[in-house]
Every structure is written in C-alpha cells, then in structure tokens.
Length: 295
Image 1 (cartoon, rainbow, N blue to C red):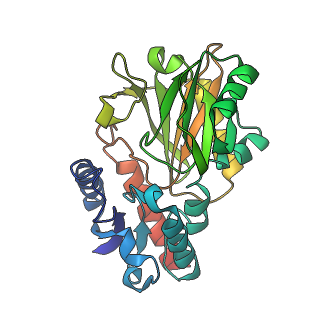
Image 2 (image 1 turned 90 degrees about the vertical axis):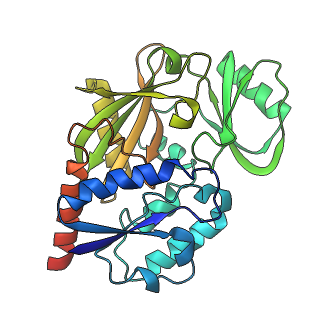
Image 3 (image 1 turned 90 degrees about the horizontal axis):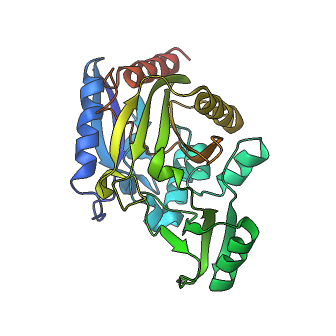
C-alpha cells in the first residue's frame, strides 16, 4: 500500500485537541478507498531534519494547525523541506509564502480583487483612526498578518480602544456586513479542478465563521459565476502547481466578489459536506504520486 505522511499539530499545541483528529479521520477515510495509507506525524518533529519524511510517496501539511504561534520555526521547516528530496505538496515555497497574509498584496498586484487592506508594523489608535478616515468604514477588522482560525482577530467600531501591537505586522480591513447576510463562500480545488463549494455563515451575534465559533456550513450546488472567476484568477496569479487549494471569498455590498484568503497550507476541505467525500482529493493525490513515480 502506498504510504503518505500527514503533518499534524505540535504536540504542545492545545488549541485544537478535539477538532483535528476528526478532520484526519475524514482524510484517512477518503484515501483508504484508493489504497493510500496515511501516517500522521507532528510537523515540529521535522523542522531541522527531513530524514523522517523520506520514504513517503508524498508529505501533506494538511494539519499543521497552530504553525502561526511560532512562525520563525515554520519558515525554518519550510526551508528544510525545500532543500530536501522530500515530495511535499503543496510546494514548500508556497507553504512559506502563504503563511504571511501580505501575500494578499501580491495577488492584488496581479489583478485579484481584495478588500481595501492596510498592513502596519506598529498598530496604534492613530493607525486605526487613519484607516477609518481613508475607507469611511463604520467598522474594521484587525488581525495579525501571520495567524489562523480567527486568532487575535478583532472587530472594531469607531471610538473603540485599540490594543497596540508594536513589532507585529497587522492587517486592517473594512468590516464587510455581508458576512452576516451572505456568508463566506469557499471553493475547493484538487489537482487544479473544482471539487465543491461551501457557504459558511456565522451564528447570530457573531462574525467569525469557524466551527469552534458555531459557524454553519452548507454545500453550494453551483458556485456563482463571479465567485468561480475570482477563484480561477487567484490560482493563475499564484502560478505554482497546487495539489489542493481553498479559495475563501465574500461579496461586498455591490455584489463584487472579494478574496478573503487563499488557503494553500492546511485548509479544512469540509469533506463532511462534500458529496464525493474527498474522492476528488484522493484522485488528485493518486495522480501526483503516479506522476512522481514515473518521473
């Protein structure tokens, strides 16, 4: 049986003890059907030396949740994997690049529509008030450029006190009320092909759509044309061969689709609502492994 490694959270990570094993089980179920055995191993065990990852047909960083808590270590790991002969997907260069949300500015320079976004290395009351003035927004979202799962994400109204964060790059965007009325839509791609789309909505009184905050997920039978066009533009702008990608987006008040995140490291594929239960991912991985064997 073909063996692949799935990189899992640092054993010292306490934020996701019950959630990630459920996601792992869904992945294992999908891959078992095509004869692929999965071996979970903490990503932090392979930071300085990739020897323990050799011998696997592919290494999947799909459960490296919490890497943002030690970004410097994550970047060292990516450099180690890049320098090794380990078959890792997505590519280690993409894993490093995608771990800092400043990639959004690069995608915007290639014509990808994103919300008005400001990055600052010195978050302060003055910096926030300046963005309020520049955007005329009633509310803002503030979060670290290196983060995940809504970690340290704040929703600010005019006049709210700002917790300053000197030395930490922060992202500031206008709050889009459509998150509450339209939800965020994610398009899942495996091997460059659209697999399925999922709409995620927050519960009443909440703006975060993650499962741990009560987010409600539903299959989108046919993604809107504008959403699909934006996703294809994102993938073209990334310009790298990707085994998987989750493109998260939101319409603004005028109905224009805006990229919120291109999740290329450790996205949940939402296999629980995927009609094919991960068969598309399993096929794409099988093809990647076969191509590698024939290279």
